[in-house]
Length: 394
Image 1 (spheres, rainbow, N blue to C red):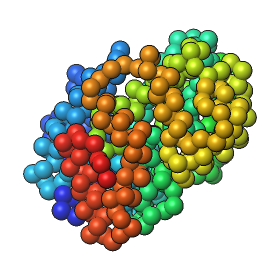
Image 2 (cartoon, rainbow, N blue to C red):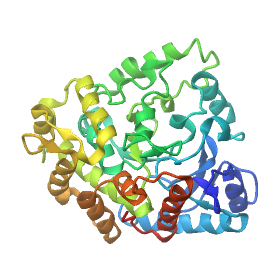
Image 3 (cartoon, rainbow, N blue to C red):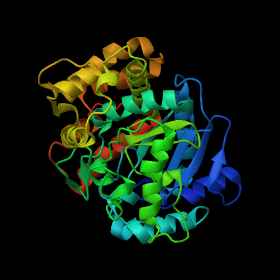
């Protein structure tokens, strides 16, 4: 998020960052390693690898360098970057400024159909992981692993316990809104957990074609008839040969984001390759059953209780009542042989696995005081962590 350095209020200045970097009004600036772009609203700047990368190790340092470059552009304008998955006191009904430049017609169509002036649309920052596949066999194994592990993912990354200047009761408030964004057309998001579909032809028939058919009366020009319309928590991007995971709140610094990506990638690889759990036996697990687990994790994050023997067997987890934090410690141990190594990941993963998700650490730092001065003080510390590339200890 781009915010006022003094008040931390949102500032629609993404165009300024991109213009200063490119020397012209643009929507994207591509560097050799990391590219910058806008995403829907004018106070959000998106950073992404400029293309597929063979390894995640090293990416955190590259992202951190670009955070510093953007911070240097913003500083003379009295602005700075703010991390986490949502702004704690933004009023999206009054403060939303949709991006008016390239892709403006697409964003306008989303706003006309779904209404983008709300927390689930205009007040959110998420970290996406795109994991590759080649052909139906690899897609089927990866999609099976993703849909089973997805309900536990927000336990690692929940960072949004405060919206509208109050504690919401959900540690992952962003995800609490996510499934409701496209409620006008239920087929767009489904139950957020993807359906048990394991080949491209079936996916196109049962998901894409259904979405496009349901959207047709609202989008007669077909502006949104594209793979990006799919709002499940993980979506098939056949146009790029990848599954894109979308249920992860942004953390306090790039090292934490990429460390989480490294752990999730390692765990999925272990599952998809059959070295952990038993996704072959349980890959068709009922989607509503998995969605129920996700809802509890959205609310309680790392302390969510997991007590589903089949789900636990599918992921190779300990039997009996365990917490989501227990589950991730077990998954981390099982995934170690499949995880890359990057020293920058050690501190974030150690903090998350022992002290809890960022949302829990934010609440601890607030001490129950959500007055505007205290919120600003705590989130200013988070902004400092982003600039310095440090973990927030709470």
